[in-house]
Image 1 (tube, one colour):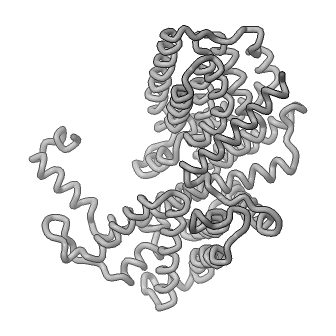
Image 2 (cartoon, rainbow, N blue to C red; image 1 turned 45 degrees about the horizontal axis):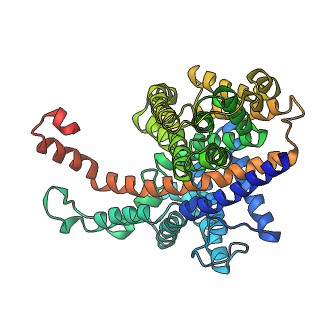
Image 3 (spheres, one colour; image 1 turned 30 degrees about the vertical axis):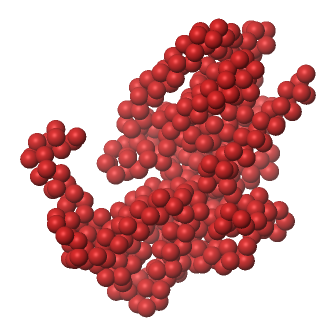
Length: 466
């Protein structure tokens, strides 16, 4: 029976992975073997080591830190994500090899010629201009592959707005920006691509993603599922409530709805279907519960880190503010699941089939220490970067305490690689967001938009808010 159940879970995991690849661009990456697989692993591991090193011993100058961060990401994106859906998923196309080299070289141009660029103080040479144009095009292409076309269209629309400012009628007109000036502002200052969004990605967002990757290697996901089964598996509609609790717990360390669904969905959806739930409802419960993972402190989606940086408040205040909305969200999902189970007369599982809380905590409870330590450090005034670094070290240390959770050196390398891979979408999105922010600062669009809204509301702040 155990072998049959394991086979069913493996088949469900394969099916869910295929579906995720179809609907989530970030999950539709190449599965490489041989030489290129080793190259990608080496680059990804080096990427993670670089981030850990700078977190431990001090980040570089903002421009250098962000340029190296972007170089690693672009290099990996073009190796892992094909330009066309029809291209092979088991080998790298020669065009993508060229793109990968250019993707690494363009940001590293800033690193190599950093002193010259500082001394020129905004004067753009022909070489600067060519590199800047190539870099912007490569970023847009990387975003198209990993994030999707809509964000690319938004970024292009903002750049067109910057170039055609004189021809735009009304309050949103501006003096216009020529292409060399726009390229210089977007790529050679910290007001554009290398602005705050990419700065946040290059410091603590990456480390939080890496922290989640290491926690997953230790088996924390199974701990969450076992705890959820022990708490709610026996209740009416037990597996659905397990999905809700497990997704809430996994949300504390992932901040990604897709990762959350993949982590628990392959286990909870088959259980719900066996209990009597319609397949559509089972999938809807898991998707809804997993979506809330982006709201669940302490590790929420990337937007939470950006909020803290942009508005200048400690990240822990954002975490504190998110607790009640997150709990209300999951309470609402739990309530709907309960009423649906009552309506259909669905029972939970036998208590004999379920794990005991005490036993689960004795076997794997030590894996919760890094998560609790992270919360404590954030509340004690540690920067998110230092808190995440300490949490990563504790994760490896705590995993070594017991044989059933101990990870090997190979597991550590896999965690480093997975963390780097998991950060690629965030790096691409924040670099593209930098283009948008750069246009806003260059054209004064932010002030214009604020003035127009205040005028429309006739100075009434409440109406302005609406």
